[in-house]
Image (tube, rainbow, N blue to C red; front, side, top):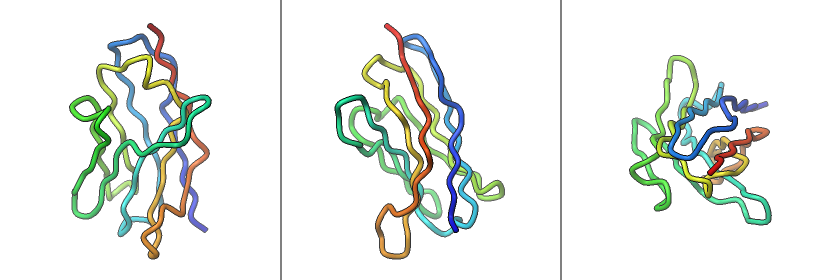
Length: 115
């Protein structure tokens, strides 16, 4: 059974940085991504990375967030710089299944950006 485990969330001031990590054993051949859900809003796509290293970003985070992965550690990262209060959300790691859907999800990690 695939199990994704996120870490690295927390409280940071606007303009600061955080790095999220997600252990994704068994998904080395799959695309991995980050999504987020703010209070009262739907879950939204943030970034994804597929083999070998093709990356995609949502417009609100382009130029500020960087997704990367370490295949040796089966881990995907999300480096978040110049954080804004509107980045406050629960961030979820996701893995793509063979059907092409984001079928594997972590439990989420809270990121709070204070103004």
